[in-house]
Length: 198
Image (cartoon, rainbow, N blue to C red):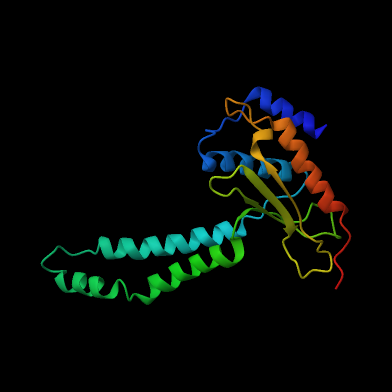
């Protein structure tokens, strides 16, 4: 039934990628994966995105304060000299930017989606969905893992690596029914995995 939803969505509004641009292909596939996972009852966890937005906003406010200080040039000369000297050494900017980069490097990596457990489920964790499409390659890897790998409910990660050529037409239109089925099969495989042994 859900595969039919993918086919219906494909007929209404086909997703088209530039087949010469792997970023375009990966973007469309990742966007479709997000739709499929959410349709399977996993609500999206946007807390990590909110933290990144908050830290980015703080960085921008600091930069705007330095840019639009309330005095004209001759009067703010010492302030500007101080900003120029302190900019590379500015502990606040470096700390917040460092935290932002650390979150991206350690927590997110190649993750395209973080989810909460399905509503009403007490025997599973949320998911971390990760994808890879190396440059100059047609092999797309999709990995579904537990959002909390230390949990008793955590299951071992599952993945597939397949050529993107089986999901796109010559014109670059995504055949959503085929892709939907492959992603759904992977989600079902994850759901069927036994609990990891400790």
